[in-house]
Length: 63
Image 1: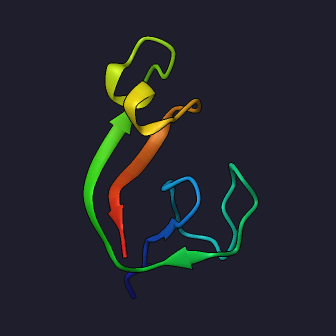
Image 2 (image 1 turned 90 degrees about the vertical axis):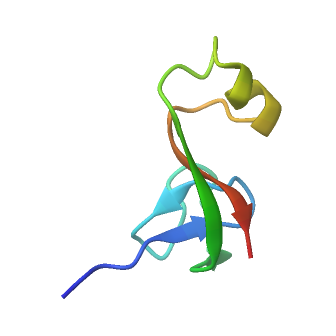
């Protein structure tokens, strides 16, 4: 059985749980587009553009 990835609608982080590990929100979506992997949020221009401060996997668009 395949586990489904969810994306937090507030911070756009991927999770497999029913609650976001970063912002503790339960407002999740299974509809998303685009994937960004942030390794170092302090020096990444993409992370700064997305407003990301914690390394991890993030969606570009959350439906």
